[in-house]
Figure 1 (tube, helix red, strand yellow):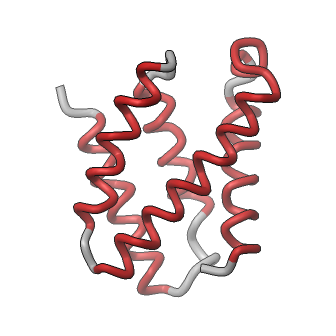
Figure 2 (cartoon, rainbow, N blue to C red):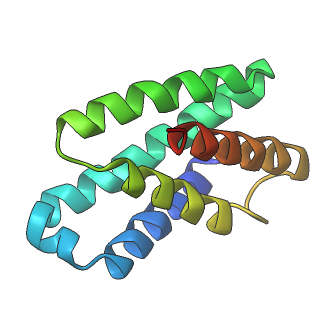
Length: 117
């Protein structure tokens, strides 16, 4: 994925999250918004690595780690699920078809993992 594409996706996703959840501005402020954008870069980096290695487990292990880190910082799992759902809406058409299919499958499986009781 091109750096410009990754930046576009990360910025669009962060904006979408904060537009949908304006209380995040009160709770985390500009610093939180910047972290959300950076987090989306990390999500995309891990999706890229998983695709390159042809191993969904890489992204799923990252997801488990991510949830533990963000929960320790007061971020609910529902916000991670919401973030991944937004990525699934924003990603199509921005990467090659094979990569898109793989990444969307990873995001769906990650959300299923996060929503397990």
